[in-house]
Image 1 (cartoon, rainbow, N blue to C red):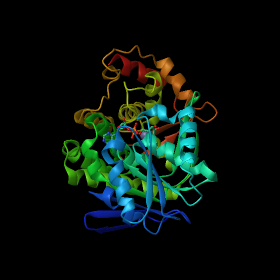
Image 2 (image 1 turned 180 degrees about the horizontal axis):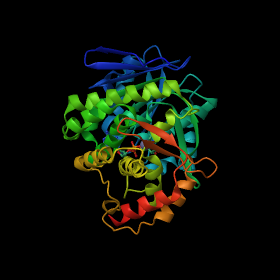
Image 3 (image 1 turned 90 degrees about the vertical axis):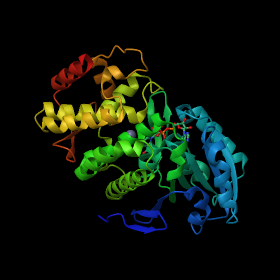
Length: 383
Ligand SMILES: NC(=O)c1ccc[n+]([C@@H]2O[C@H](COP(=O)([O-])OP(=O)(O)OC[C@H]3O[C@@H](n4cnc5c(N)ncnc54)[C@H](O)[C@@H]3O)[C@@H](O)[C@H]2O)c1
Ligand SMILES: [Zn+2]
């Protein structure tokens, strides 16, 4: 396995995602939005890009991004989709494909995703199938997208059967992370993305989790240096895991699903809506995964407590009663377990969890005793 390489210069850091034949750079730093044209120079098959953004992000940043391309002689048009998960529905995807074709792209046109995970997943999938495949660049604008969804090439849309069930592994040619763009992100979205940051420490980097405990609050309060450090460490971790297991054929990439089996059940129960953001569900899910590990005698109880304490301290809703948009929800263990069975991570109905032997010692488990799981959920619901 090749470790991701890094180069540093002028407050910009570059991390290479090492995939044979399709390696690409993640450029991270302040002010990179205005330098996207230079960064992409040499990667574009033709001087033509179509930027896809959403109605919240486009007014803030699309004109600057288009200007950055135009300064380097690249024609840039912008299409916008409504903000929010509904833009990943089939109908919205069809609309986007027709809007893209209205722009008369050719095989050498590059799509540029400017937005959070919704725009990234949607645009990446559009690029995978437009004219049987055109290049695309990710310009992620949420913390969640900067540390997770923009790297690794998972793209896709939603169906009535569930989220992300139609999609493709399709890697971008470049990821441009302008850390300044987080200044406009609502705090709740920042916090949700932070759960995925802490996740990397919990998977296999205990020192990084300790760093999070010491620096997480300052980072969330807006400290730019700490924010950049967290993004770099997260991208390094994700690049390393993706380079070693691009298509989740071993259990390695599956470790990125820490907290996601529980989280998915909580999201399904809250309707994948504004009551519980994806990152929030991951935070609560990681706390439950460590509790389950402790209950199964796999992990020291003190480690599970540390996880729960840190996530709660920064303000993530880790207790089930804190979830639900103020309305006390009628959680039921049986219903949550049913959602877990329907999760695409479950193989042949067999529940799959990422558990841990301690902080930084995550592993994939397919043999969780359902009675233990049921008991844990009953207790979490009553707590
Ligand atoms: N492909 C992957 O590997 C992967 C991984 C994790 C999540 N995802 C997907 O990502 C999606 C969630 O992504 P998300 O959390 O980024 O949500 P999102 O894309 O819906 O963005 C959240 C909200 O923040 C707004 N916003 C974005 N950037 C902003 C900024 N800089 N300033 C102000 N407002 C801004 C958006 O308009 C939106 O309303 C889900 O669909 C999920 O399935 C994909
Ligand atoms: Zn996630």
